[in-house]
Length: 363
Ligand code: GDP
Ligand code: MG
Image (cartoon, rainbow, N blue to C red):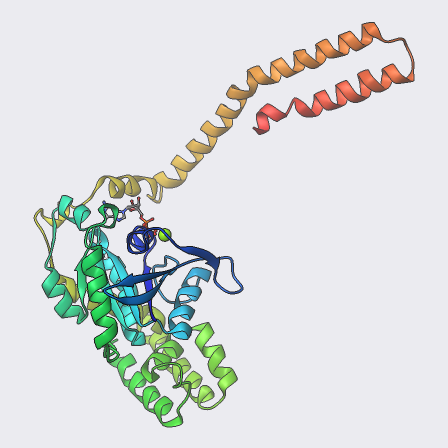
C-alpha cells in the first residue's frame, strides 16, 4: 500500500484537502509519545490503495517546535511514498520555504497549489506550468474548500508514486563561503558513510552548519566523523560571525528565500503594482504591530478589559450582596441566639457570601 503524507503551513487547507480525499472518513490518533493529533485514512483510487496522513501544520522543517519535529521525523522515519505539499497560492513565497526544505532532504514531494481562488481575487497571476517546471515536480491546482482539483491531484499522486525514482534532491547555492565548506563536509560524510543509511550526505552537512540540535546529537551518538564535522561547522560559523555578523543558519535561510524569489520572479505576476498589495489584514497588522503604537494599543485594550470587568459585574455583585443580606436577615430573625445561629449567619452566610461576591468579577 502506498503511503501519502499531506504537509504544509498552518491554514493552507491541508485538513480541507484531507477531508476531500478521504471523504472525511478517517481515524484520529496521536503521533507516538506526543500529544500532536494524527489523522489517518485508507482510500482507493483507480484500483490502488493508499494510506493518507495529515501532518501537523508548520512553517519549516527546522525542529524548533514539536509540530516541526513530528513532521520531519515522520518524513525521515516513515518515508512516505509521496508527500503532497499544500501551498497557499496567495502566500507562495512563505509557503515555498518548507517545500525547499523537503527538496533539500530529497523527499518525494509534489505540490497542491491551493487557494487559487483567493490568489485570483487578489489578482495574483501564477503560471502553473512554469512553476512545475521550475520546481521540477508535479503541481496541481486545487480549491479545497470547494472540493476542486481533488481527482486530478489523486491521479497525479498515483502516477507520481508509480514512476518515482526518488526525485533528485535540490542543491541550491548558499553563497561561496558556505558552499565551499558544504562540499568538503559532504565528501567526508560520504566517505565515512556517516548517517548515510538514513540521510543524504549533503543534508547532514547542512544540518551541522545550521547547528540542528537533533541531527547533531544523533551524530554525536553515531561517533564517526562527528567531531570533525562539528569543528568545521564551528570554524565556518565564527568566520561568518566576524565577516558578516550573522550565523550560517541565518545565511542559509536567506539563500533559501533568495532561491524562492528567483523562481517566483518568472512565475508570479501582479496585475496591480506591488505597492497596492497591502490587503486589509496586512494594513491592520501594520498598525497593531507598530513599535510605538502596538504597545499603546495593547495597554488601551487591557484598560478597556479592566473597565469592562468592573462595569459588567457591578449589578451582579449588588444582587448577590442583597441576596446574602436578605438571607442573613431571615436567619437572624428566625433563629434563636446561640452557637448554631452564629455558625449560620457569621460563618456560612457571611463567609460564602463574601467569597461568592467576587464570582461576577471573576466570570
Ligand atoms: P489547515 O490548517 O492547513 O488544515 O487548513 P484548513 O483545511 O483548516 O483550512 C483553513 C481555512 O481555509 C478554512 O476556513 C478553509 O475553509 C479555508 N480553505 C481551505 N482551502 C481553501 C481554498 O482553496 N480556497 C479558499 N477560499 N479557502 C480555503
Ligand atoms: Mg488542519
